[in-house]
Image (cartoon, rainbow, N blue to C red; front, side, top):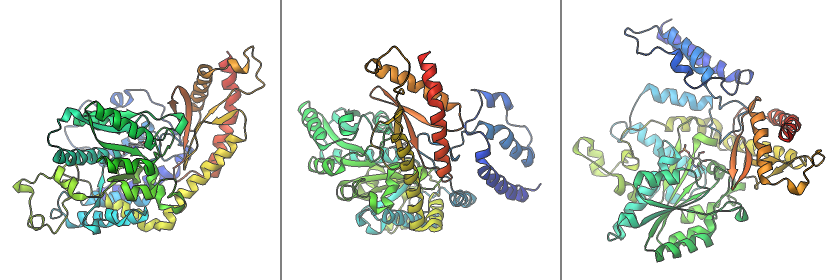
Length: 489
Ligand code: PLP
């Protein structure tokens, strides 16, 4: 088959894969090293037929894929994958363009600037974050981790300009014990000290203003200079939302940059009914930078992290390197944005195409309906969990995330009294339960929450329907007894 034919066939195969996902295995049944064993040791000396290569993708690669788009995938947080977005990626690949400067591909830069403004409006961000404001602005990054790193670099540069006398080893990055690992990683990369402020069950694992004030007093007294705080809207563990309304005034009054990581939950700002729960007012008033990922719950396949900053000059002053070979007439005249100065690498993918395709195809209402559907399904699941005394919801559910665990049924025949069944025993039971679930055709991840073993159910696949929630429930229901029996030994 010629390559053009292979291209048409690829689209058919992709559609087949996605349409028949539910019939296949969700979790791959492979052992570490399976692919090395199956593949030759070297690149072929002479080129091979494309048909054979494409066939090997199906034969060798697909069996080793964890199917994130499967409707029974409820692990971590979802990674969206829509046809519209995949087609956007395909078109952007066709022009294979590293788009680092306006002049190296004007449409790459301009589409991104417009799509970032559309998105800022979709999420009801303040005008100052729009590219059209020429004050703040939005840029697409690979991941939320890159977004946080870039924000902290800008924060550090800003702080150092104001306090040139402070040595680097005295600078301190704040986040919390529930912040995604991106907090620690940012400190590692930049060689800066970090402090993870303790969040506890008492406040549902959300950071409060009080804790920030106390930490500031303590650290300053010890000679440190906290200069940035990474707050989270929708933590990875439990979906907790840090109190931006309390934290914001403190960071503002104390000269700390406030970066908000809303990698998963941020897209919910498209729905006005979640503005209060996500502290939209706090974001608009206090955030120096705000990030959410379209590639999590926003219908766009990986990668599509969106970062907005209140003052773009702080980003570009920290990251602008302009040797002669990167300069252009338009850059020198200051009439254009050169996105290479808003990020770490030079080259960048033309990601805005896929976001543009999705936003146009779904429209604001379609985007909201998809999110609301996931939240409604999560509520249906929560009703089932709450109605059954064998289960308990551990932390308050947020959006489409539920954190739960099983309790031993009250009628179990054991010589242990209820009071004897302590947390360690419950954890052992839940580990068994989770392991048993892992052998079924659904995928759920677990977390250790201050020593409590919990199971997370995050809904987000575009293909998940009510019948799948019913199916999850049936599996959970049927696995409790065998898990308890195994636990009892
Ligand atoms: N922030 C939160 C709250 C997350 O849950 C995750 C991943 O699940 C991340 C950041 C990391 O996202 P990325 O892979 O885009 O860096």
